[in-house]
Length: 83
Image (cartoon, rainbow, N blue to C red; front, top):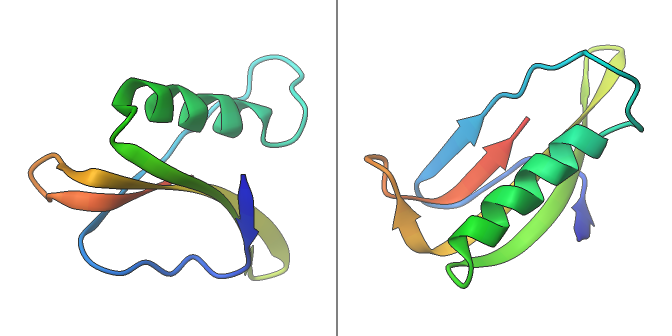
């Protein structure tokens, strides 16, 4: 997985927000597993996963960006950010 600093994307894009809190996971473990699961289901249409780190005020946040070769959903998105 490639790492990036700024959550910027070109073209149509979509996002998924994951909220969880049960159990004790390693930081970002659930987010990573969810993104890899989606990428696996879209394979071979998914071409790239990258980890994004950015600041929200005083806190740091993380997301995973999935780029596809096939447009997804009504938005025809080829970039999916998972937060």
